[in-house]
Image (cartoon, rainbow, N blue to C red):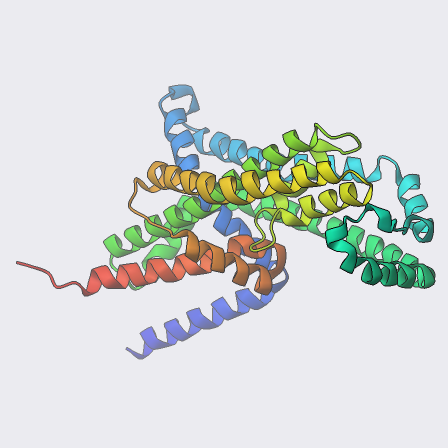
Amino acid sequence: MQENTFLKALGVGAFIVLLWLFAPFLKGLSVALLLAMAVAPLHHLIYKNLLAHPKFNTSANLIATSFVTLCFALMFFLPLSIFLFQLFEQPARIVEIIQSFGHQVTFDSSVLPASLDWLKEPLEKVILLAQTNQDAIIGFLSKWLSSGLKTFLSMISEIVMILIFFFFLLLYARPILLFVAPIIPLSRSVKRQFFRDMSSTMAVVFYTLLGVMLAQGIAFGIFIAFFDGYNALFLGFLAGVTSIIPLVGTALVWVPVALKEYFAGNTMHAIIIALYAWAVMSFFIDNIVKLLILNFVNRSVSKGKVHTHEFIIFFAIIGGLATFGFWGFLIGPALVAFAITTFRTLRKQSRPTHH
């Protein structure tokens, strides 16, 4: 008895030491683990199909893992490469825009319709304030650009680390589970059901978010291509990325575009952009398309057994982004999924058995 208690204490101590040792990589490892859980059904499907061919028997797991990891690498780095190319295609132009900021900040009150006359005085004050503080604003923009680049480069290195963790977690998923499972003091059936529910819930959340991001990005990219002076690929990418942010979402992209058109005197263009963004992106995609994607993924991945309400996903993403930053869009729903799966398992176990 004492030996058993001592071993448990030693195990807890070893776990704490490991947490301390891998603390710098804990977020990356967690994200990789969640991604591995989300794609587990897809990996298993590819693995089973490869096993059907005798020549792939020994390498099926490696091929399936490499293929899924490559898909993730392309999903992360292809848009980032496009973003960087568009950002640094004309670096001299960026510097020129920042340096000539004071001359760019102008406002013609004649473009305002009579119904918006009340905006004339506040806008003129804002423009005057920007012009009188030109040096401070230029300094702020330069620092912001420098800080943004550092953050961006740090994020790229973090993605590389996540992909490395992801590859090995997926490749050695079975040995890891076989090693860890006996330590968990639950029956085999409960552990199996818990992992399946958790994996299915994560897959539903992940593929739903991915589907909505693609839909929003494609919808805005194709639409903005009909207007002169905009890079459709770049803005479509930004619309897709910002679509995961609750409350504001794609408004972070289309509102500045609409305002640019409005203050350039293209009032009709601004109205068309705003109406399209509201009707197609905010209403149709965010409500109808998202629900269709959620239901389709739920049926495909979990066979309709796991029901993840959109309301729960919404607040999980808000909490995740506020607590963990960018990767919170995945960690937040994961923590909520863990809690829901735990409560669901407890509920099943507490049901009275009928003989």
